[in-house]
Image (cartoon, rainbow, N blue to C red; front, side, top):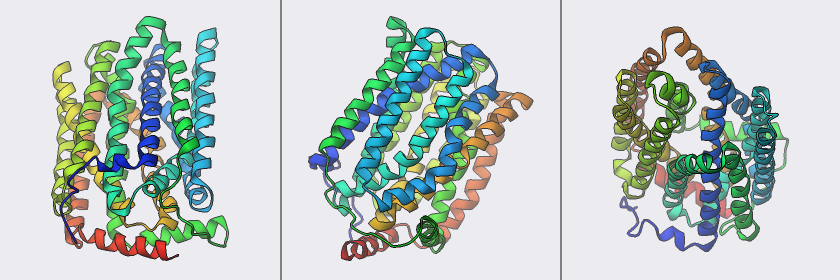
Length: 423
């Protein structure tokens, strides 16, 4: 077993199917981040309430919480590519609906919430299918590279998307950001028309949806280390995500007294940090994973405290840069390990459980943290989250170190993949 990373971290892009799918995803994600910036800013123009921003996130996350496990079962039972096509079409229609309502002057706050609910329904099926589909486009040893590049495209789009949104909004108005997002889905739909799985999972099980779910839960429950890794995602969702994404428009406007340009700087700084963190995943040897996870956890806690204390835009940009760099390292390594070790016929369900640790907590985390920010103040809320995050993850990290080395996952994962291939 080798512990060194591949000599050419980008060699996975030589896989035609993966490269095509990855490119389409990158274009679509850029459009998505354009809409995120525009949509959040529209909400802020309706109201300055932090709770209103939290409610928007609640509206999109609640259906994901309720349906993600079903999405995982669907990904393991049916054609993942067709699920992805259907979900992307639905998301495209919703983007154009938002554009039409805003352009006609009929958009109201409740419209945004309703469209967010339908977006959450589509995402509940798209996310598990996407995560389970990617490893089928590459060889087993290329999975870490594929996951890292997917993370890089996600976070890279966080740089390009907000910056591009700022330009098109200035030139053609907010409607243009929504329209651009709608058209961006054509890129991923085009790629899906031609992509074919390199290593499709042929496993088909008899039984009910509930039995499928139980099998996935049992697999994770019997592997405590996987539960610890999912615990890292859960604490990110509860204590970090509301501050990093949901509260950022209000943080820029109220805490830093800056406008949409300052908000764009914050989001772009976040994107740069996350992109660098994702690209660094391509070079991390297996034996260094525990150390990198520990450093990432410490970085997130420190960054939240810095942002809570900051009075200057530049320092807040530095804080959110460190936050996103650390965030992407921890989450990226956790996702890499999970996708390496889970056999193909279970990957949709296990990754849906991992997604659930994120989206299942998200609706309530957003409401809780935005509500707390209104009671004790935004800065005090960030400080409290930073301290609590550090304490909780210190305990989880010690539990992880007490388990067998993370590098052992590679051997466990190869056994799982061999078993899946034999089936």
